[in-house]
Length: 219
Image (cartoon, rainbow, N blue to C red):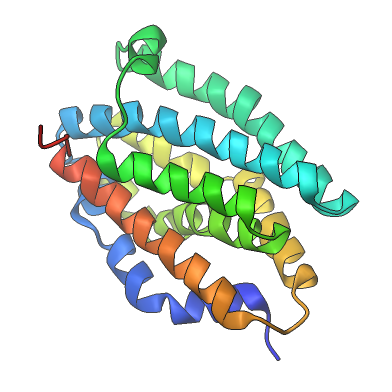
């Protein structure tokens, strides 16, 4: 029997292939993405960042020591390092955090974050880990798949943003998350984890689509 993370990724290949080549991604890595779309993405990313931190905190409250330790490390990273980098990015984009905090999340963003929180609140520790994996892992895959485009990208802020997901530090986080998922799986209930992984992967695609279309509420 293979590793759970790899089996899940294989079953989500049809979704991930579309994530890797989404117009938002391609244009960002090529340096042709309109800045207003990137700014919208950055605004929405705040809600996701806070939601992710809360999801890891929920996980830590119910998991074994090893999983709780990793969950708290990632929650702390979200609250400190990620937030610090986020604030630096806002300054470069001439955007204010107080303004961002008062922005309403777009429908897709709200639904995605609520999915993560409900999964981590009501589901098992492993279900929670699986729900969070597509975001972390797909960003690394996106960066690896599109990294050659950065050589011709003249938008410094896009290049700087993308290179974060090629760093050793980021790859180490993804590796730890995959490893603890693989070690936690006992070889049963695969369909349950598959549903969670596919749903989160679909939301990842929808998040990029939301940003590209600058999604808003209909009324």
